[in-house]
Image 1 (cartoon, rainbow, N blue to C red):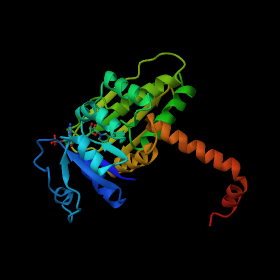
Image 2: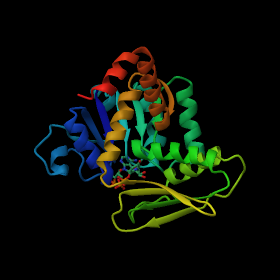
Image 3: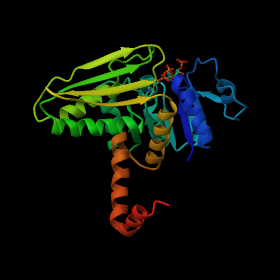
Length: 272
Ligand SMILES: NC(=O)c1ccc[n+]([C@@H]2O[C@H](COP(=O)([O-])OP(=O)(O)OC[C@H]3O[C@@H](n4cnc5c(N)ncnc54)[C@H](OP(=O)(O)O)[C@@H]3O)[C@@H](O)[C@H]2O)c1
């Protein structure tokens, strides 16, 4: 699978290194006015030359036809996809976008295009596996502990523009889904220093309290999630979220367990 990457900021650089290790990176894109345009990616990452030159997003269609990536991973800003979604669809390049700044209208536009079968998109404002498990657990807790008070806390570095984070809002939605009655779910935000990302759900009753938390302490966690999503979306059309990828993996694991019950029995008896 050949991957193009757009956005070489705090996160994109780590993603680029990770994709180089996977031997999956075919193309990197930067803004038309970027000072790094036409330099080797290795120079930007302070590693040996990679042979991959930074290309601007100008004349994107021609560049995509030439390099033919299967999937583009987007860690830039909401401007990129808004301006280039039709070009990507035309060139048959699917998208994993980790960008968190889209408004509802933008998301609806991308979804409509993907639902028509023109392109495959993974919309992933919450790209790590761990935080998706947290969401699942929060929804289950809301189903069972409906009379408890739920609060969502999130902490990120001081440069993060959106507040609360897309993930915090999604966690709150999951809790609302799980609850039988409507209830306010306060969201508490900290923007400080270099915090990579932390989300916590506090579930407080009269006599006891439960907390579920997730912390990313390396941006490699984002790179791993993005690569998984790229592997999933390659060759597909339609609109997906990270939870669809996990659900599909869980279904496959369950099917495997049903079809191979003896193997699992043996593994339990003899872990070696
Ligand atoms: N889903 C997740 O779990 C997750 C995790 C981490 C980050 N994110 C999201 O990923 C995005 C980037 O985060 P970051 O912290 O890495 O930000 P950042 O350090 O500001 O980096 C953004 C990069 O994208 C480039 N860029 C912006 N608009 C562009 C465009 N239209 N075309 C091409 N390149 C463009 C910027 O170029 P210039 O420097 O030249 O402006 C910069 O290199 C944010 O939306 C953030 O919330 C999501």
